[in-house]
Length: 434
Image (tube, rainbow, N blue to C red; front, top):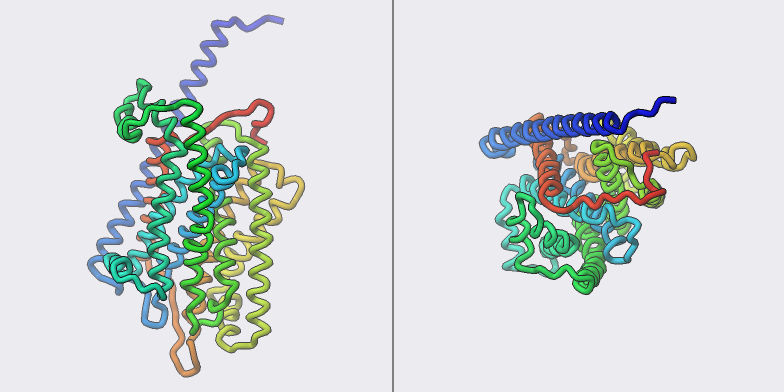
């Protein structure tokens, strides 16, 4: 058998590497161009519709005052809280098998929180009024508590992300990279990268992670659920179970988001994924999905047996009206049963590709879950004789929403490009693609 000359092998390898780099640059350009295009369209729609025409550019009314933007607000709040709670497995509880997604989860938590707040600013119309809640704090107001929790939570996320990558920032500041001065600025003069300093940072991260758990569960997402649950005139929302479902839903969407980001990035960069970690995250996802499904079952069962006309009308609107497709297709199908089946079947639950598919379907399906938490109960009149509502988002609302979602992707991509977020490391014998 003839042996291939070493020089030919080297040339072939360089040629392959060059072609791969060219392909990656092409994908990156398409990614940036697509996001910028959608973002610009969204901003044009925002100015033309929301800023120049006001709320008449939406289908919101006195009967249905909450719509698409509130649904996306709680959608991104859930993503943020879930991503953060997943990061606490690494930094709070020392489960270093998930370390490769730790910083990514924190960055996505920050970006999702910014996007969520932008959506709710659009809905309330006067974001400057939040200062009233800070200056004239009414301690009996759920909303006022929520605003304070949000501020604390964002500060904690930023500080935790900073300390998780501080050592790498110092290393980059001392490297010949063109952004060395930028990284040097971010270190604020800190230069100690000894093992002792690293241990101190880890200890601090552990403290921050532990503090953040009750903040995220009871303050941010449980608190957001409480804003809905205290709506006494809406029996479907007014239950003690509702904030708990919010938290489970956050864990579902946050875990799915972290899996999707990690696997998608590796697939684009043609890198093998850590099979053990992805399968373990898939197991967490199926556990959270199962608990959420059980809670949803009890929520509907109690509502059904309660025989309250308004609650039965809400369930009927959700599952048997012209809006029912969002419930059956998105909430029950994409967000629950299809991912559960994929993550239970022996053949698919071990496949990275199918776990990735289940995660993507979950992320898409949870949009329907959030819409069903907002719209159907507002459509049903609060008492007999009052007019019922009707709501479908306008084109302007959709384009503006897509623009803000593109902004979310842009912010995350910029964060990944500028900061040492990627902790990719192939562990020999563990990493493989399927």
